[in-house]
Length: 491
Image 1: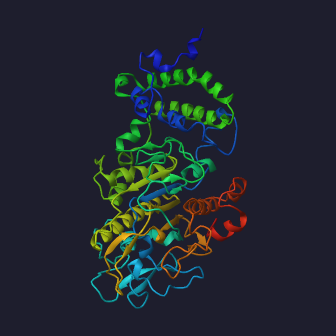
Image 2: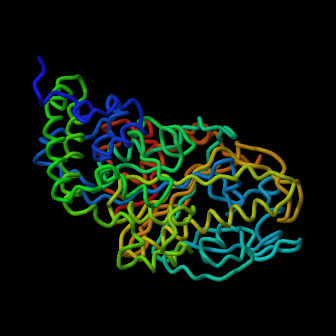
Image 3: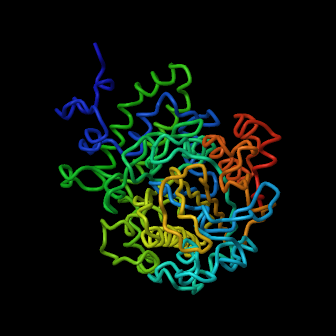
């Protein structure tokens, strides 16, 4: 006969047994973070094992740099935003297939940013206005709403370092193994109030597959209100006082102790059990405090944040409002990893206009992330990825129309912002392009999306001073390759 402690909470409340994410949230009785680890209980492996009661607070982030992914679904031409180089660091003979014409000083001028990285600047001839790189335009003047502007109104760039990576990708698929949030969480990043956040209802929260280690099932954010609702109880219990809800949370946490003990008896599940217990204990405190500041538009800097993201403080559902709230929670430490998904990047429609608009929008989002970090006085690491790339009409000018998919010209971006000043780098490229204007497979990460993603994570781990983790977990193959791909240096 089962003891009262072993009776599931849903049975005690005459609620049907939850079978999926929506069922669990609908009960309103499990703090969200405790449920968030359940779908991936067999795959979540964190780097240390300890008593949850003693280490819950210690495991909540550990001073690690916030990690935000921006995925551009559809395959844009990230390579056309800057002056890509060959493996030796020299210019290519031509950039016609990358939409930049004959090349630097012939079809466009070079514009430097991030301490000397070369971008596609003003066009020479043709119909292109402003910078050829609309991504750079958005970065420099987020919220300017003019893709032809050459203003530089984002001083956060002065404290940001940038590195690009060339990699051949499969076009228009969610199967590229580019997501590294599982590795970031395994390294130790955790939110004090919220789990890993995503925008798409996928295993990673974006339309990319995981590299090496899948993350716990992300909390998919569809509204700013979702963030606050994840911390408390459903509206059916709104009649209870905060004190009563906190007491109920403690009862639920205690009633699950036997299940947590059984989890510990399963192979490889000790740390998963610890995380579940941590989540329950932490959320008891959250309920008692009323939930905290996960809706940033209601706190003292709400108006400033809304201005950065170009939204009204009362906006709860627009993409910018949601992105702003997710980014705030990630950078402030409330949430763990943050995965943003932007659609519309399969833009090879025989024009340049659609692509210019989408590239500008992507640059704006990254620029706003950096400005948010500046506002909060916190560091941040931003990873930009995409599923493939595109090719332009063959022309000597920078206004060639985007014609079709061309994943072999794929690329990733890495940004690292620090309020103390621009992080040091040993270079600005990982791999390079060949004279066919494609990612050079002679470099190990050039033809392997998962390995290229691990190179991104290796740079993040290095910024956090955790090269030991890379060796212990065989990330990015071996020490020889890691020495080639790690460009960021811990300050």
